[in-house]
Length: 412
Ligand SMILES: [Zn+2]
Image (cartoon, rainbow, N blue to C red):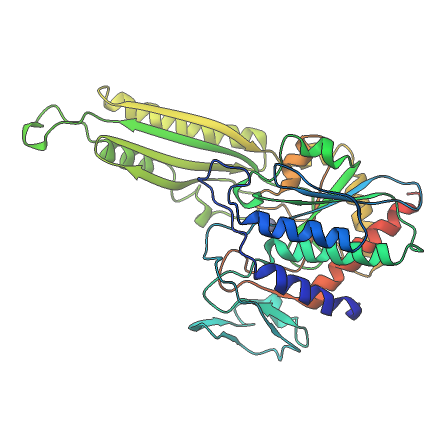
């Protein structure tokens, strides 16, 4: 497997150095113009390795075909080019620790920061690997440039070795996954795959086909604004009502910081405004439809109760769907999941399927008709300065990609 590690390291470090952070509040698509830099580079590189139908769409997705040499399902491989808006992603300086010695890793640009195998047991299993991190002041962006590197490496290998039988493969590199806008309404048709995989997972073995179902809620509170010197009996302070809503919601049992496994949550992500008007944004998450609906209903009930306590204010609550648990569709046809599990077996990896406490581009794509489980890349500690990945793990993911192609050419 080691013959891929140098290429993967080279690709990941090159892609990671290109700032492609997405931005939640931007109305444009892609959300940031800088994402075009990496998208254009990938288009060029796909052309250089001999992919066909290479296209960069106006919605910021690179598409390409590896023409099939044998019949079989058309398989899509996807990764996202954007990095998370939650942490500094400008000026990423990737560095490679060759032959990791198993000790604590320190960071050149952040002397107080350390990455230890005691705190992160997965790291302890990577002794001797080549570990890639950022320099301490930024995230790395292995999420999901590792996925991009893995797909590019597998595609290069397949195109260079036409003797390896393959069905038609479609490649897609999407923008804005981190802000939930990676799947344009035209993507399913443009991708034209029977099923697909995102390479956007963590530890070796992850074959994920269950994600959160997700809604967003926006609560707007309009108080009564008046000069505070003349306010007695007249002012209604929106800040106080917003605080009441937050305090009434179940903080001890239903927030991200107190839930795990299959539990959902209500997460207040943003509160802005002033005494006259306040806005609170929530994300609602649950693995089940009724659990998600109950969380939305709870936010609405709390808003209604606070509204009833102060009729002079105006409180509105708007709930919008974001994505749905891909299991709803995949459990009716497990073909892509079974194929991934057989591919894992082919390369001696034990597949592990745990529900993703989040969503992927595959959540939306699955809902829109292309079943798309998520596969491991090796990425760890994503969205922060301790992000790291093993080049050897990426090589295993590349082998998995190739094994999937092989499995797809043999009858199930
Ligand atoms: Zn990701």
